[in-house]
Structures are given as C-alpha cells and as structure tokens.
Length: 399
Image (cartoon, rainbow, N blue to C red; front, side, top):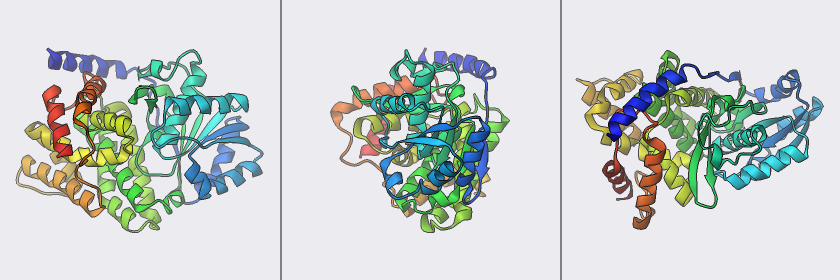
C-alpha cells in the first residue's frame, strides 16, 4: 500500500509541478566577476543589502573585493557572519534581526550551501513573519516573493544558488528538514572561479561529490524532470567526471574550477525540480544528529545507496556511465563501472567509505523515521524503500 500510494502521489505531483513558476538563475561567470555584482544590485533598485556568510570566509579576506566594490558603488551593507556549517533555526532568527534592524532590502549570500540556505530561510521569514522555519518545512509553504538574493557560491557543490530548497536544523530536536518553494530560487548566481582557489582540497572533494549526488539522484528519478533537468543532470555528471579530480589536485586551475561551478549549478537546477533520493534522506538525518558536513555525508553514502538499488537502477546508471565515456557489454556492467568510478575517486580524494564508530544503535530508529518521513512519498526513486531497506543501508555505512 505504501509503494502504491507513493507512486500515485508522485504522478499527481509531477502534474502539479508543471504549473510551478520555475526559473533559472541568471549566471554571471568568469574570473573576478564578483566585482560586477554591485552594478547589478543597483540595477535592481536596491541600495542596502545584508551579506550572509560565515566567519572563516570573512577572516581570510575572501569578501574584500566585493566589499570594496559595494562601497565604490554607494551600496550600504551589513554583514551577518555567524552561519554554522549546518545552519539552524537560531541562525535564521539572528539573521532576520540583522535584516530588519538595518533596513536591508536584499541579500548577498556569500559562501557554500550553508550561507545560501540560511539567506533563503531569512527571506522566507521576511515574507512570512508569522511562520517559523519549522512551520514552513515542506513543499510550497512560503507562497510569497522573498527579498532578492544574489548568490555567490564559494564552493562547487551545493547548487543552492539555483535551487528552491533551504535546509535548516531545528536546534531543539536536531531535526534537519527543508523548505521547498520555487519562489526562493535566487534570481542571480555569481560563478567566480577565483573565489575557489583557496578552497582546501578536502572541501573541494566533498562539495564536488555533493554536486555529483544531486545530478545522479535527480537523473535517477526522472518522474518530475523535463528535458531541461535531464540534460542538466547528464551534463553535470560529465563535467564532474572531467574536472573534479583536477580541481582537487590543482586548486589554481581556473578552467576546472569554473567547470565545477557550472556543474554544481546545473546539478542544483536538476534536483530542484527532479528531486533527490535516499542518499539525501539518510544523509540529512546524520547531519542533524551528528553535525556531519552535508557534502561528506553525500560522498560516503552515494555509492552504497546506488548498489543497494540493484538491477532497477541499471538502465539509468548505464546512461550516466555513457555520458562519462564508459563502455560495457550491457547496462549491468556499465552501471558497475559508474559506481566503481565513484568508489575510486572517493578513495583518491581521501574520502572514507564508511562512518565507522559514529552511528549509535539507539539512534537508528530516529534516523530511519526522519529519512522515511523526508523521502516517502515525495522522492520518485527507482526503488521504493521501506524500513528494512533503510536499516540495511545504515548498517552498511557503519560497518
């Protein structure tokens, strides 16, 4: 009954999604292009912005060129730099106060997925002041235009700069959940590869795998996708196959860095309509409970989840393998080559294959409950998982 209901729900949802106000963020690309942002902001009639970022990026001076450009353009700004790696509802409320108390009219989200997600949630609170972030968890709960967000990703992974989702942890329960609303898609995304040059290799690797997970899971779903999302997902996988290890080994390679930014952007747009899957559902639960970086959770879980889907996933995995130039006698062989490639690059980039001595026995029921609540019936995965399937994956990644 659960599977039948889920497939019916997904079929109806695919029809509803057709009428959503979808958009694709306008891209500003190229080395040093972040300094072009102030003129774009002025062109939107905004003269006072909240910059949502984290303390580390501010300390290393990554914002300096942007701040100088804003000052030269006569745009006032306030900096909120207390965003956690896994942003919480408290972060959102603090950022909201900064926004209101300083008379801001728009936001620059500067950083990885965490500041961008936090800025979207702040925007949702501005638009819906009588609703908490927890009350807005779910699909199309904002339903009002939020202040314009100018997204400046400093990693190539989350795709939040073009996605409609905002992932926030409720501090009281440690539950990580998402607000999904197409009205939260930022209208602008600044893809400046110079901002990624100083990115540590460990962050380059895991965030790149996060982008891969978005592209793979959205492509595997298909039910909600149009040709745009399918093409974006395939192109993102190809770009990641060609550029991620290069970016990891040579952070100064601006071409590879920009290609990874484009891949993350396309993967983000693919999953914002196509949805994700069980890797994300379990990974979100682990991030909330143990404060694991989201991208690391995705990198570790993805190959295990793909293998667990078995033959039902072969056809689409084989198409992803072909996009990367992988050959095989049949779809099963191509699928295994694709998953083995994920294993290989994880090992090459020093990403562990499991979470050893982390997941507690007493937490497993909570992890399963949260993962099932997130994924079923919303995610149109190729295989419908029930409680034993989630437990099997959890036992696999903790062995």
